[in-house]
Image 1: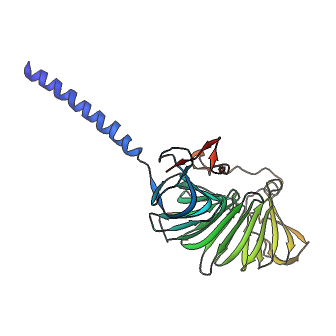
Image 2: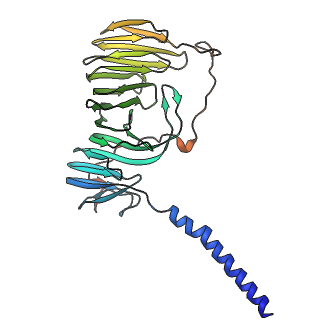
Length: 323
């Protein structure tokens, strides 16, 4: 009888240990916050909002450095600047009157109208203002700088990136030797350039993407294979019509060279416009006919909408807390 009771008690204890091990312990590890970076240096008025650090989900004025930043944290400066160092040694310097968020997760984006494979990405979202960055090379993850209208993807480079919410203009500058892939947020156009500066704006009403070349020579690729070669001082607008598969190029300043999908070249000067038609692969329906839906990415992998720009030093009438 004693042996049977002992066996019953032992079985019960083993069951309890099994339950605790496989249900409670792993969940505690899963809830551990993911540290991404540190604010190493700051001057003036700098604020942080975090889902991890206290006070959670509230803007708090930074009092000392270093300060840990976790996945999803936001940083904004008023009359101040801040320097962020990521765990891999990459550096981001934030100018005055700038607001950003950092995120590391699986990504899926469109490039020239085609969904790319899922990849691991580190995204620095710029809601407003300007930053400068030096990114360390990495084969494991891609670093992206994102505004509400533009995405600049880098592997290893230095660059400056700014967004003006009043004009919805994004300006990207890269020194000689840097390599950037810059696209509008919907993946209609793409520029790969090794040096120079370019300003990109998207008109939400017409979907026209306007490029103003500040310096350097670049080739703009558009969905369906149209190329536009531009130099410093050129200004060009691009509109892609997915329904009839045409690309319209409007030149507002300078002289650009357009190469259509069939390889035909033409030079356009300020005030001139041209429209190109996609080169249709075998089996593709002609322009104007319904297209086969290629499908959207899973909901959990879609790029989230960029949240509204945080307000100043106060929120909902309450003063910011102090970290």
